[in-house]
Image (cartoon, rainbow, N blue to C red):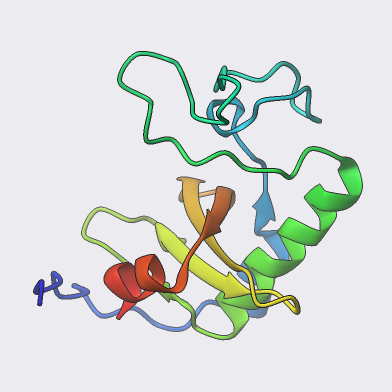
Length: 135
């Protein structure tokens, strides 16, 4: 069993205003088709694996439309409301890592790309990865 670093320093709960400001922005490095942010950058091969040098382990995110962006922003906010996150040393106002299980049972990992503004990118993960990261 891997020992996780302690969440230091202890943090007060996020305020409703902070949660309302949080949003899913996405990232081109996890996209293989045009998405709301522009062109993809994962460059997956026919096997669906990212082909960029040193990025072969990149998880491809299927969220590419505006409706999906709104749904992802909703799950980021729900994860924050439900306390499904971990702060790490150096995090600012928002936690670096969040998770959420949607109605279909898919677990989503959110990674904060701006810890002051509360913007996240994210991708699907399996339950084993969730346990490894969040316990």
